[in-house]
Length: 488
Image 1 (cartoon, helix red, strand yellow):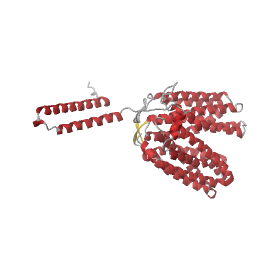
Image 2: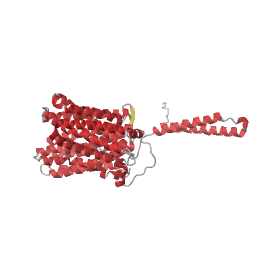
Image 3: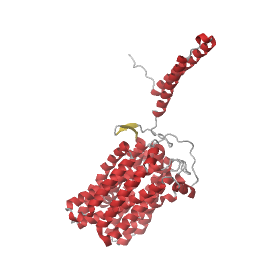
């Protein structure tokens, strides 16, 4: 019985080729030495030197290809083709899974729990306290410097911390099953704050892992997957969990969410490598001790001015979004119709928009795409100034477009912040930028509601549109920094 011939692996084949080239280079050296010893009649060695240079160039190219094509995927996850480009799946799967496991508890506390509390007779001021879930995301800069180091005691590397935090989040959320909304609302709010602290820390570590382990193009698709997964988590946390509560029990729905968190933490257990895998080294890494020095270093960045002004404009542009549901009600839609348009149609459209944004970021870069989308955002906001003169269907279309753009721009801002952050201080840089972003968006939404009471919708939408144009302008001021980071 004939056997198929054995074929050497790629690594063995490259090793054989490299050894053959080294042998030819050594042979060339020997011939050159012979010519020197034979005297002037044999002294013409120019062709031999050219041969040596050519062989060395070929060997150098082979070594570079060997390094670039070596296994850079983490664990058992392998490279695939996404959007026509070779891409490592590890960043996409890790970002998507952990964004979803953050999203389910977070949006349960901000969208699902208020409905349950109201149904049990809670007052509106008590329901308003459920939004404390977003406070840790605005203050995570306080503990961000601690995670600048790639290894932090007691758990070690970033993947080890993600595994621990996923268990901690599931455990905290499981405690919710012990307390009923009608009897222990303040305990549930306190648990929501604990879960939010864990979620904010997961966001920090996950972003740091991506900055260290993925190049710019891989991060673009990973951020797209993260936003899409966060939206999916919002749908599950605000709708599916309450449906389980109606069909079975409060305890059953909470246990289901806790198990979901654990299931979606599995990629952190599959990945074996916990060190940079695709980003070229920039030299010796020097990490400052956690504290004020890390924040001072970030504030001394040569492009900090345009970045801060861009974040301020992001908050201005997003602030008016809080008025869109009220605008739909004023244009004749019922509360259930407005909820369906924004909670199902608009929110669902964010998922394909996020992946389209990922493709655009890979193809054209974050600066060009962010600038174009903020011009589109400004156009939608300017149109909403005259919403009172439009048909209700037109206003609904503008509202859906506004939400869709908001989701796509979230992908862009994550990408922008990760590109701006340094690899040596990834947690501090990303934490400061996203904390300021969260605070200003919260302030923008609060201010929009107060201002609209006195001067109406139109002025608020006009101010938000100017903020969108300002965001476009300041993003383009960051283009030099982005160009420098494009090779990372």
